[in-house]
Length: 198
Image (cartoon, rainbow, N blue to C red; front, side, top):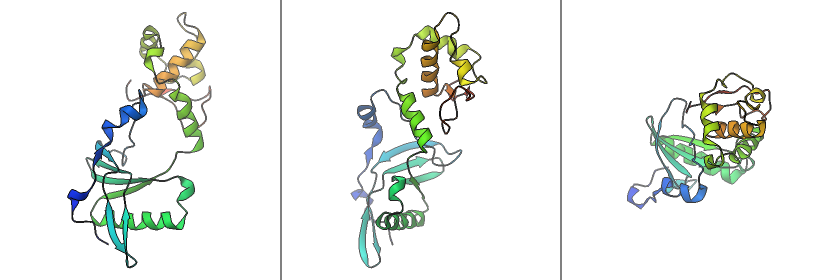
């Protein structure tokens, strides 16, 4: 197998220019290619791979090219249910071999576990900051919420009714000011932590 020498023929399209039109206010949080690596740039549908595999010319366009401080990472995104299909696993195998021959890393991403996906979908309803009272958000950001259970954090406080506090706390979890374990179903017992924006 070999990577096509004519890199000028590769389609490179910056994902950043498409994200605002596709996602509105949602700020995508790209996955880190590896624990500790820093993502420098990303492109969707970044390049065309060609290789001779089993006597036949094969082509594949990976989903993403991530440029990290540890080097390029090529990413394919496939639903878990399709990974066991022979054609898909065959394509992913020769793609991995081709990419790794170049000295790059290759990853296959699938949907998160059901609980995590449900939590993200739920929290997405709290993403628009303009829907929340700025004074309440400031009060919650300055408060001692980290270490409390989610149930305690969502109680009414300082004259603010519990439903408003709860929705503001969920907004601050969405924006990564606070964290909770999203791999478990959201419940009053989950512990609130400090997020990256705290």
